[in-house]
View 1 (cartoon, rainbow, N blue to C red):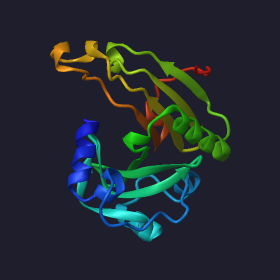
View 2: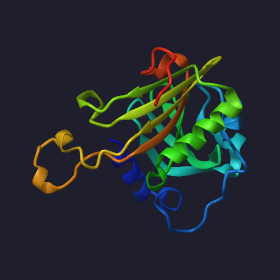
View 3: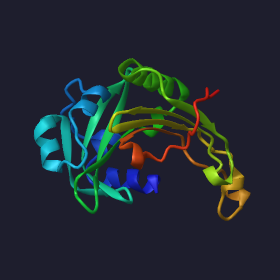
View 4: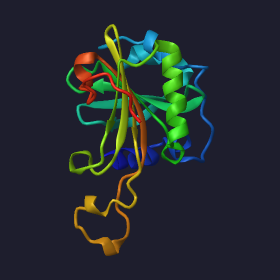
Amino acid sequence: MWRSVWRAACLIGLIPIICGGGPALPAAAATGIAEIWQETSWGEPVGNLIRRFGASVTILPWPLDFGDSYTRIVMRDVIVGGVPLIAFFQMDKNTAGLKRIQLERQRHGVNQPAFRGVVNGIEKAFGAPDTMCAIASGPTSGYQAATELDWSRGDKMIRAIFRDTTIEAFEGCLNRDITAGPCGLGGQLLVRISTPAAAAPRCSTASRAP
C-alpha cells in the first residue's frame, strides 16, 4: 500500500518534495514536531491548517488515500533531531477533521542514524518514551523487523517506528519464486501523532529495544 501512495505522490505533483527534481517549493519555516504538536487540534478542518501554516504547506491537486483517512496538504522539511521529514496531515474520511499526522523520511534516507536522530529530537521535546520494543521478523510483520518507541502526552500519542529493509526476504514473496530476485520490503522511518485511542501501539510494556 505504501509503495502505491508514494508512487501516486510522485505522479500528482509532489515530485519536488518526495521524488526529487522539479521547481523548488517554499520550505517550512523552521517548523518542528513540537510546533506541529502545539498548533494542531483533533477534528479541525483542513482550511484551519492551511491558514495557520500558510506557505509552509503544499496543497495537493487531489488527495492521497491512507485507508481510513486522506491527505490534502503536506509539509516538507519538518526537522526532528536534525533529520528532515515530510508531514502528511491525514483527515478522517467520515468527519473531514484532522485524524492523525504522519511524518516520513524519504526512502533513500532511511537508516539507523536517521532514526536515532529523530528519537533524540522527540526526547528533547517530550522526554523519555513511555514504552520501547522490538518487533521480530516473521510472517505477521511481513518478515520486516521493526523498532517502536511510544510517547503519550495528554490527548496526543507519538509513535516512532523504524522498519528494516528485507531485500533478501524470499520467504515473504507471494509467489515464492526465488529466481525472480529479491522481493522484500524497503525500510521505513515513520512518526505518527494521533489520539492514544487511535494509536494502537504494539508496545505494551516499558522495555529497552536493542
